[in-house]
Image 1 (spheres, helix red, strand yellow):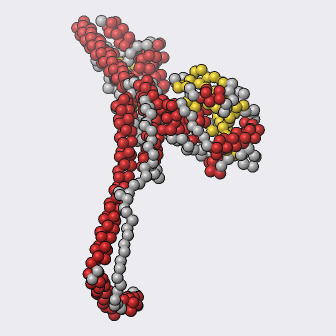
Image 2: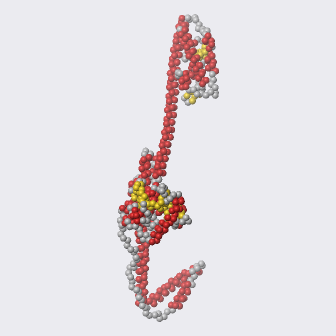
Image 3: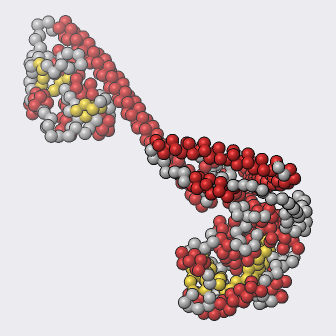
Length: 627
């Protein structure tokens, strides 16, 4: 909304200068009529006035009401100022809003332009609406334009006769949607005014005309009835007819009633025959009565036909006018739907039938239909503009997320702020869900990679352990072969010499007698030759072997060391097979592919490795000496 040239004019309301100023603007008091909600002026009347420039001529009674209203306004101003807590100055202002030249004459405006004042002369119905806070659009549309032109934040609306006893008030605040509807109404009115063609002068109200003026009927009859018992017959017949029982309860009553029906029919027949006989004796009178009956019958027939025709044609004319207005609105809606496709406008309420209810003339009926049509068209155009704005918002923030809005056609009709919040919330929810899915997928992938890396490490450790085992077996086999070859050489050179156990050195004595331990855990006596140790065997001192055998894992000691941790502490790689087969230390716990050991077992591993290395050194040293 673009508002420019907001100007205050130094003119007094009601003067000639004020009237001339109003001629070039769309005024606030005209806004209800332009939007088809005025209680006093139709839209067609306002179009005619704006086109011709001829102002409305008010009656003396209306001018008197205006004078009373101005007087009540002057007396009520202090009361309104007490509520507004500020002085209220009457002012006339103009502004250009989106190319529309608008004017507003305010009953009062505060110096800070925050509060406007609009007052109406007291009437009970309006006072009740003010107390209930349910003002009709006839008043709210006018205040919308006054607030739009003045820039005031809210309007104090009062209904009073100038006294404190009859003074009621309420506050009114507009909305952007109401401002937009006001401007739509004026734009539509401006288009209609530009295309307006002054209708032909209205003809006088039609006055009914008889088909033909008939001459005065003159009848002269001579002669008299010579003999008749009509008086006695009439008295007797009427008494008999009136005495017929009409309270039917018994079979006798019904039988008497059926008989009376036949009797009455017989009386009618006898009377008709007597009348015909009497008339036949005076042919001129008979012809006279026949002529009168013919004329009366024809007049009655035509009267009934015309009455039916008038009723039918009035209905047809109303139906045609309503259908024409409905068709015009449908065509405009179809055009707007084509512009906003694939979106569609919501249903537009337009009760044309109710608008013409109680209208007696074709002209008043057409004015009412035109007003409803204009109001509905304005509403449709406002809805179309709101949909275009929402579509633009959607394309601006929902690119790439269109799949989230399968119901776009339904939610596009929401208010602009609500629609934006809905779109942003739905996208944010989707992004959060996607981020959560991505996080879970990343966690799953990281877990998979960690598991794969763990398996790879364990497989690599197993491969290295197997390789070390094979190398140890090769070394043991080579050592055994060398020992056997050396023993054969010794036997060949000294066949009578018996190999004896060497006396323990001081170091050996400290450690205890040496024993040979096979991979299966068997031990040979200290007197047996070391060279006779099985292939792959390890030599330990007896004290170490005894400590190894009595080594037990405490039940409450946690097993937290895996092979990787043990190898990291040792600085070289050992395998689970080496620990179990060579050092005779089994894992305290097996978790899937991981073998876990306790801190006590780690200390034993270190001691066993030291003993194993020492024993192997002694073995090869003795073998070398023997050779």
